[in-house]
Image (cartoon, rainbow, N blue to C red; front, side, top):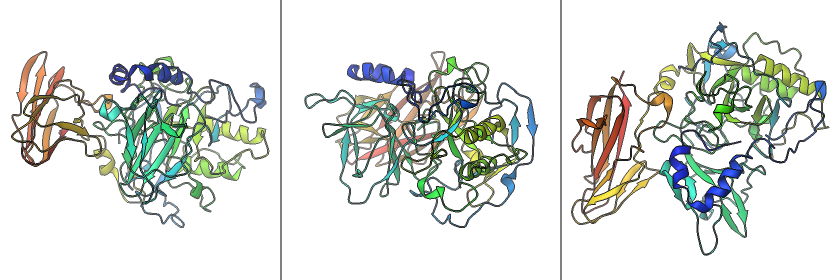
Length: 531
């Protein structure tokens, strides 16, 4: 399920068009795994052995239970490679080889917190709160998606966190078979093979021949599979990633291999999740979390990696589908990507994949085996290193993912002078100017471009570097104030120019972008912490 994320809530709600608010907020309160209607599959009394499965449904921060146990991980062994010929960054194998989804930790250290029991048994589920992964073709036609409450006379925009507002979303290639998940989250991810983009929707619906959605985000098919501090919300899951990330995919289930080739996607319920006080609500690589964290009573942040330590005794796991999951949890683990209601953990499988641990109905033996996994899972608190999806050392590449650009060019921008127009281009992550006579100057003093991601924000005294990339003669100026006093002014920086300065306390940013003049131009910046 996905509540409005922590990083998004204060920025987006004031900008949501009023007709969207009464539709969005009640839905947010009902997006737990079957929380609104209580629907269960193979339900049984929630007591004793008959408690049902609910069928809907590098620095790694240490939990509040700081005592750790170090063990040597089986992750250092060679991965199965036989049928895994699909290239990384494709529909069949999303994201780069160095993505944390495809990488595996070496010699992890584990916390001691045990996921508590809850109202239901753990589960591995497709269905209402998972998603399908829909591949567009090069000949598919465009589709425009509007916000809930839109009519023929009045269009409401779709919430777009990266644009810091709402807008109509036009997807250049829309597959004919798109079918949102049936739950209130209404997840659907569309993969465009031309642009190599994953379009991720929340509460996607089709009504009267028109598609609507409450929220839209996108990510690169060949990227890291997680948000970065600047483009922090890249999908419809609570942690800011596509709902398809980490899914058990159709083509992987019966591939004859002992493990899945990537980390799995998992949700926890409130008694397992951290509340943001005793332990962070989210940690790297997550860039957001549900805004309901204050009600949590557990210790595991969203974004945490959970694994079965190598000493886990899996001899009692007799279900072959569950054995494969156990081995995957030993090698790759599972990332906590969302919150659910009442289920200790849910691992997500692709919709229509035919994955069903209980094909003949409720099975106490499978339920007991799932509970053994629950009792064995531990949060990874640190690792010795990383191997990428090809088995090569990836420690440096993954460390670099923790120090990425923290400055976005998102608005609001206002024109200060000139006659041209400029707009934020989410896919280019640039401020783009139309051709106009003379220079056009836009200013953004809102601080909206500064990352909201807690683990990425620089501390006072940190050395940072601003670098500018521009086309068509555009320039960018950054002014930094502290406690209402200007402490740094970069002046106008052109393409390829950079400057370094010391980050102050209580930093406030003012960006001034100048278009190049006669032809189209664009500008973007990278602001990174220095070692």
